[in-house]
Length: 595
Image (tube, rainbow, N blue to C red):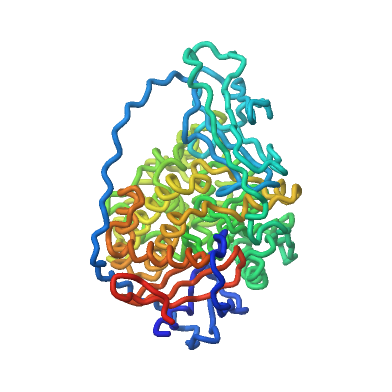
């Protein structure tokens, strides 16, 4: 195979697989290496049909836009415009419901409903009840119980509906304020209700996922939890070594020994940027992780969120907590020069004043907010020392009303003798002295663009993964109930597979410094999203054609390494974590498997 050298450092991730539609010749598995490496996902080594290359060869293949096929793809027409009805303050509408497990629901699943409800500003969210009916029979009635990161009021009903023996189509009805308690701001009762048709598939269709169980491995500082039959179980020994080293790095950087054993859950499901932490850590690990990032960086970041609970005498504010995690990790997705990247932010006009970020952290552009927070913490540490910052962090007491910019201003004045505005100006002056590097600017702009596209993909095609709206479950709840599907399944339409493969490759190109090719691929993804999922350029059409061809064989593509008129596809079968490869070449107007 001409592209065998490209298989040395694959960044991969696993997901649910389609039904095997034919019986191909038994494929040759590509086994992941046993030696642990701190990368996002497993690396592939020599298969019997491939020629091994030294593990130092890390270059990605050159991505060459293929020749356009002879026939022109149709450009879809714009959908007819619609006029949105005027809403009162309390209502439910389409797009406000997420259902877990994501993707298909199979008989035996314990279904979670996550509903956002719009309510008037004059009403306390805890006074708004929502009734849920299944086929006209009441399932439950509960009050709204919080907000998501996007500040929407939500009702989360974890594992509320057991679908055992309930194959078929069911009507789920959600009714806000069913007893008409809210009067002012809820004059239109018709928009308080929403129906959703939910199909429960036969459990026999759930290939390779019916008997999954939790597996636990003890290591210093932590207990690692994985689900059987996943990429995380396959690479458990490597993950154990990487996890221990990453936790130790966070301990050494903060000078804090953990006061308890941490629970670390490696899941196949993509959630947000690939991880979150509360009482434990939850980290995405699969063979098609379209969010990118290095696994060791993510573990350090989330470990800091657990350790800093020991440092702070009060609850932490997001700006400082995320800034500390980025600073300690030495970057957000990969090792980064935070000063140089922050200087590039200012020079390119992307900088956001800190007073706007402190109280509005998650809704601002994600990469800018995290970078500014991390670089600001680094400035305080570099200028005034770690010990003074640690004491400042420990003593910071957030405002009861959540408006923390004035409180941060007073705290900085008390501890550092300068206001937030004064320290920010000193910092900006320092950043202005840094010489701009063209590669840093290209990397920064490419990173911002990539993650904007990725979140656009999530909001359209994978909303249960979109960080502002996602349910971030307590994994111990799922483990105690024996539930695994919420952490292993994903939307499995072919459009998901194609766009996730393209996103995965774009992120790898970007991270390897191949900015030009990354921009080409990101442009192709944007055009598909702009044109109702039609791949109207040759590059997007190529990815689409290869994914569909493999899908017809019952294969689920995890990566495509494209090189002009040739490609290697890495795939899995029936939800199993074993990786296989196929070589494709363009033969006339179509892509076909090389025999």
